Amino acid sequence: MELLRKLSEAAGIPGHEEGVRTIARTALKGHVDTIEVDRLGNLIAHKKGRGPKVVVAGHMDEIGFIVSHVDEETGFLRIEPVGGFDPRTLIASRVTVHAAGGALIGLIGTKPIHILTEDEKRKELRVQDLFVDLGLPGKAVAKKVRMGDPVTLVQSFTRVGKLLSGKALDDRLGVYVGIEAMRRLKTHQADVYFVGTVQEEVGLRGARTSAFAINPDIGVALDVTLACDMPGVSAHEQVTKLGKGAAIKLKDSASISHPGLVRFLVDLAEAKKIPYQMEILPRGGTDAGAIQLAREGAAVVTLSVPTRYVHSVVEAAHVDDIEATIKLLTAFLEACHKADLRL
Ligand code: CO
Ligand code: ZN
Image (cartoon, rainbow, N blue to C red):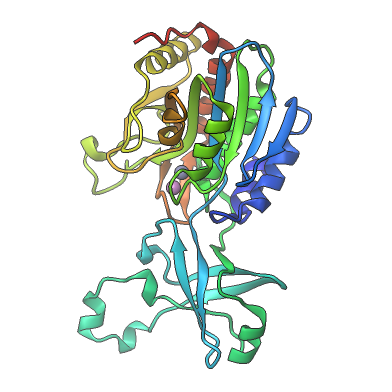
């Protein structure tokens, strides 16, 4: 899990994925025929085959912020979100401000409860109200920090019981699963591309351009999905459950999975005794949404790793589900030339 730890702890807000890309590139070296980076920053690794052409995509970016204002008097920073954090999960956390001259640690603090008025206690928290404290005088901050500098949450990767927890498991888990499958994949007829995509969290942008360039027959997005098997959520709203296997997506708000691919994956999981569950995500989407609409269109499906507390820095996934997803993806790439995709 050393690779997953590195991926999780690396910083990579949309448009600034270089740290993650370097780790992924190193991990893929020797396991694929070619590795390229396109103009948007997508990492495109190719394992040649006769066909069909398959794109496997996992997004390298994570939700975070950019510095939107530096107060030269007080030294406090204001931040603009790139991707959707729940502001309630941000109070009382440490952040890294990735300034040109080096990373700085900052604090997202808040007024102590002792001095909050009743009105303030009830008020909904907005990201615009948050500020970052670098513990430095205004002049020093103004010298070091620029508008636009990336800001990411600080969180170490850790094991919690049967779970692995950390920041940015959305979607470093997908990147990890994709890399592991590339390493394990030996015999395949499919022409396989693994793409570490950029800017998914702000609108599936890297998937759009890379799928246009590759023009695949089949697209498999790798992403986390909600596991809301927790107190206060009734069974029909849980989406997935931890420990119940890889999730095969039927639909979300960006794509409807190709029925032929869904059937093929279910049969494959049954035949290979790989634990799986079906998934419908009521809101949100994955790179499959962009791949599906590339050029004349592609047959797509999303393989998801069930994850609790998505879009917070305590995201957590079950070790067995991660392994099941890698196994199912590898088996799929070995056999997908036999899939019947007629509608
Ligand atoms: Co996300
Ligand atoms: Zn994601």
